[in-house]
Length: 104
Image 1 (cartoon, helix red, strand yellow):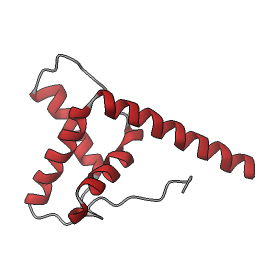
Image 2: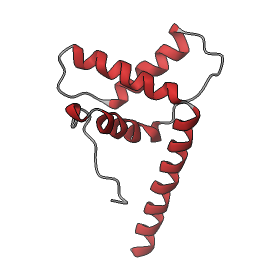
Image 3: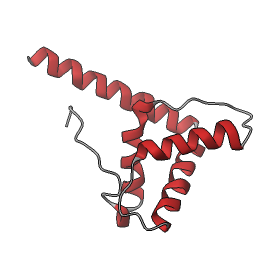
């Protein structure tokens, strides 16, 4: 049982590190998270799904624009971007519903 908890914690730490590296290498992704999230907020939503925001980013980057540097969004990064948005925008804390990480 303890071994399983350690493995889950290590997995979450590894995902967090991968996300942070991706975020540093692709700061425009957070810009899109923020832009599209504020679009939703301006439409009057009190909460929304980060999954939908990610799908809109994918649509935007794959269909609406042509990027010189294509990238892939990992679904494993969604929770981190949701938390980052709420940390940077405390007036919208709770906009995305997030669960505790297993490592918390």
